[in-house]
Length: 233
Image 1: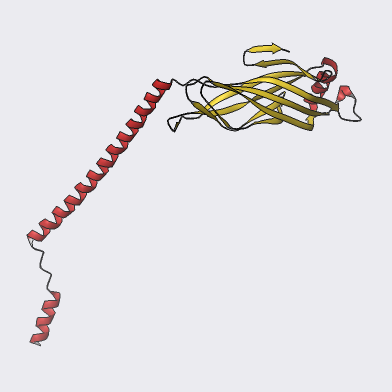
Image 2: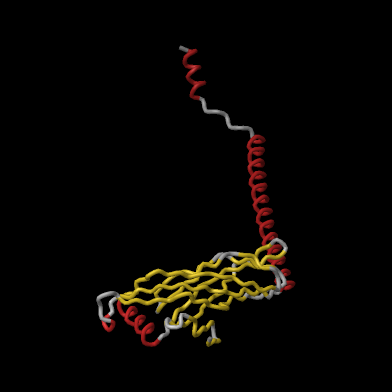
């Protein structure tokens, strides 16, 4: 009984606390780990700030040295192969509910790079509209252009029996048969990036917004206007 009582007392006796020196060592180690982690985070933060400031400084130096200018992308010439307008069969022209437009034209653009460095143009789609209705797309390929150079870029728009409905159809038939002038709009954005010393600038948008007028009788261009200035041809 005495042995059992002694064993029970040993089992239920609370554990002795750790020596004060051991507790002090654990607290010091924890404090050192926390300080080390804070130091690493601070160094990483300072490194990121330094790299950001360095990139800004390099960008400013390049801008001041190169003085980049926005490239120019204009519609130079329009070639008309054919433009045909046919009202819906069996319907009086004064009450046209639909009309079919067929179109085949070539577009010649001029890309001018006035900068001291090269430019990279992205592929783009320019839209051909009639009264805001998209008729077709003029695809412009991507290309690279050297400094202080001008390049010709051609594209083609082909539309086969596009169905123009309701009020636009009536006006289209009147424009083609009575006024002999079909007005189209060519619009869209061409993206360009300046490249210097292996660095590429952010994307710059060069807007294209032109109005062309085609004579169905002559099958030729009679008017072209891009931006502010217009040109009669």
